Length: 254
Ligand SMILES: [Zn+2]
Image: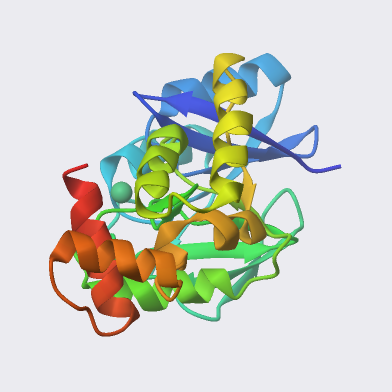
């Protein structure tokens, strides 16, 4: 029986730990120490490390974990990340060591140039590209790339559970409500997720279906999102890429 736990790291990162009671796999371990503590507490053996992109808060712990457990490491083909054994790109599938589940790869550039997502078994690990009710900043990519990348994730089955890299959800919902004040699903989501944070629980995972209903960055074709973006821009915008670029820039200074 596969279990998935959020291991907090740094200020607001989550390292996702998958385990079957004996073997475990770490996704985006920015720091080795909390992973080691988790493994020790549950008497688990680390069988592999998976990484979505090269940022230090996602791969900083990878070299130490790979050394200590002599386990294979998987990550993006197009990014220079230390100590990767297997470099994945669009369409590649692999069986996760120790757990036996099969995951596929999507190239999702935008936050970084070579960012990948891993998906399968109803799970999506999307690093800093799709957040709960938000999306990552464009450090190395263009709005058009990010719109394409988010569209790939949005096409996954609605019940797919979304595991992203940070606990940003409540701030993202506040912004989403500014963009789309008429979206009743947002108010429901705020109440539910605020209650989780009050209990010190992660708001994650969410689902693709919930993101489609509430995440403004997946809703750049909705009339209210377009109208808010145009009001903020002070000019008419043509098409989802311009709408996306405007609300991404708006969010940066929100
Ligand atoms: Zn990042």
